[in-house]
Amino acid sequence: MARLLITGGAGFIGSHTCLVLLEAGHELVVLDNYANSSPEALRRVVELAGPGAEGRLQVIEGDIRRSADLERAFAEGASTEAELDAVIHFAGLKAVGESVAQPLRYWDVNVSGSQHLLAAMAAHGCRTLVFSSSATLYGYPETVPIPESAPIQPINPYGYTKAAVEQMLRDVAASEPGWRIASLRYFNPVGAHPSGRIGEDPNGVPNNLFPFISQVAVGRREQVQVFGGDWPTRDGSGVRDYIHVMDLAEGHLAALKALLSGGDQLLQLNLGSGQGHSVLEVIAAFAQACGRTIPYEVVARRPGDAATTVADATAAAKTLGWRTQRDLASICRDGWCWQSNNPQGYPKLS
Ligand code: NAD
Ligand code: UFG
Image (cartoon, rainbow, N blue to C red):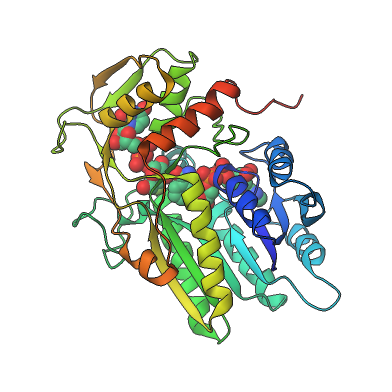
């Protein structure tokens, strides 16, 4: 059992990971300002984790950029004998288009927020960190499947903030012994817990394909726009490496285990399935899962998109002993279970 701080634990990936961590017996303190999430998500996580879980999840509403909030979280997580064992750092902003319009906000939350967190960790002698990085670092990839050694060449402010934090982590790891850090470069996290109780609940019009398709399926939106039918792919639509959020959550558990059982480490690993699916294939798989037709039209390409991004997932398999277990059909089945049971997402608090 470890005592962990989970920043951004109420969000999409954080909530699923909290569940997996509780099920593995860990004690959690979540620090989240609910900028893009609902307290209801963590209430449901505790319910899913079953008897005894409530006492192992403390929630602090606060901001990673505020030292006072971080101090509260570290105090809450410490036992009488020891400080927190590790931090999993999900908190951040993630919308590519918004990052172009509001770059300073992205640098503030993602980079300055991470800097404050690292300072608090150093002050408390907690030097084990799992960081949510992104395949967006690779920009337009030159080699597919993309190995971790591929050049870091972001193409938008969001990507630059992730690259900057990864660099900060390399600098910190090199500055003194004792740091154990894993930057996990997620490909396209989608799906939901199979119970349909927790899932992805984007604000406003979804930017990403999977929640858009789910909202069309449930009748909230009319049709999917397929961004480009002339990509150099097998059916002309864009290809991505979709990873079930429960596989991703289990990847965090595996990374944490690797860090806590070893000496100084600096891991930079892709978390993906190694399989690519096109937009049209995802639409067809979702239609199959929900038993409804998903109307779509092929429109112009979206600026900034690449034709294909697929992970070389071999390093994570070798280093963590982790690989994805769930296929596209499970992703769509579980995503539909969440969307059909929660057509408007989590209940909005008035
Ligand atoms: P999310 O928006 O659902 O979760 C992020 C959480 O952080 C939210 O609960 C939000 O309220 C919280 N938060 C934001 N700013 C905060 C602040 N200043 N202080 C405290 N809490 C704050 O997003 P997600 O999809 O769960 O993503 C989690 C992490 O993974 C992010 O860092 C994101 O950049 C990264 N990531 C996500 C994807 C993806 O496609 N979902 C892909 C690659 C990387
Ligand atoms: N797409 C559509 N219609 C839509 C939305 C998307 O056709 O309404 C297409 C895109 O063109 C792309 C694919 O569906 O081919 C996936 O697009 P997403 O927006 O769902 O995901 P991206 O691959 O563009 O990016 C996502 C996150 C990034 C993250 C990246 C990691 O938005 O933040 O995955 O690989 F970095």
